[in-house]
Length: 423
Ligand code: GDP
Ligand code: IMO
Ligand code: MG
Image 1 (cartoon, rainbow, N blue to C red):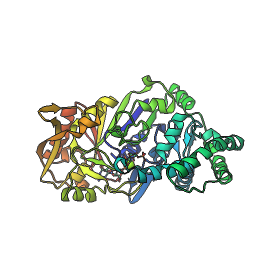
Image 2: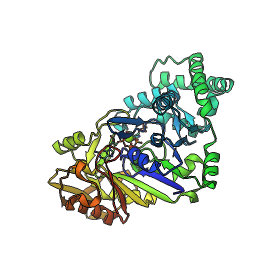
Image 3: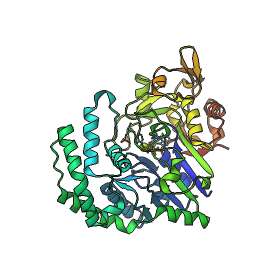
Image 4: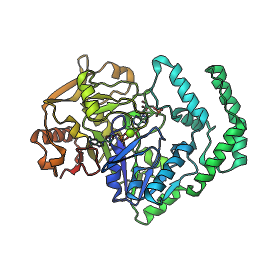
């Protein structure tokens, strides 16, 4: 390994955290490249459950972790995670890029009011201020980590920015906000003091690391179809989870990457609004939600559940140029008599094998299903791939064949060790 990327192939929550923890054993540095604390990555070790929102899960393997320039950082959340990690692991080695954006209280307020007011177009965001923060970054009115370590600079910026934000909140959304410049300044300068010791140029450090043959793991957050360009827009996040963005997000060129590992659940989930062609609805959805514990790691919201969608995965393979796949949560399907898998879409007489480029077209698509025999196994008794029931292997191999990408790892339970290699 020199540089590997882990990327979600669906709508997030595919089990990236668990796979990152596994692969991080062989890495020197684990880095997040985009998104913020809208992410929630879970790793279960014995009876301990670790949840990460900003720090890469690779911290559990006591590796150096980095947060790249492409991220949006809630400093309060970050400090809490750092303090918890310091308690859990004695010491940590973390680097935060000064170019990363800072989520401010007005971003969170705006995210909340826009979500509450927008009605039909309601995205179902995590209300962490992600969209408004990325919007400010693009408008060049964002606050960066470098700004909160410099009181004078922060004061100047806030003097310029705050009146506009207050006016929007009050006059457009009718929110009588209580944001005071002095309070914000005091609070964020304190955060800056705590974050300053971790600040470093992630781009430069990673470049040096690669030159010294160090191994870097990019831990993706969100998923392919939450990408702001290629996802189910507008029901997406405000950043770019796609593998290609890993390089932009940390400040490296594309030719350093030698593997892209796509993570897919053995079925599909989505939290938040937007099209979902293979959504189940009804008692089976409820059953799988309970069995798979499909409740948001960040917000606790119930996740919508559906069958595996090969149209979606084929498209995700292309968008990320996936080299291999880790298929998670196969155990959740265990016990079903039959399993449906979406092999294509039809739109009237037309058959589609890739996701259409427009959401209007997607809205007219219906799934074509193939029904495969179900399987039943006790995860505690499975030590290798060949101990899986034949019909479970057939399911895995059918996916592999349809996507023409090898499945190398299979998740058969939430615990760290419940992962088998497919050889
Ligand atoms: P991430 O955002 O992609 O890291 O995924 P999340 O952590 O938000 O959600 C995945 C959930 O599935 C977590 O609760 C994991 O503990 C759990 N999980 C991961 N892999 C497996 C698996 O193979 N089987 C089961 N049953 N649970 C898994
Ligand atoms: P991980 O890294 C699942 C979804 C939200 C919403 C949309 C926009 O744990 O896989 P945002 O708050 O980003 O503006 O919300 O994106 N979303 C996620 N869904 N997993 C995530 O991250 C997500 N991050 C954002 O539910 O539909
Ligand atoms: Mg998650």
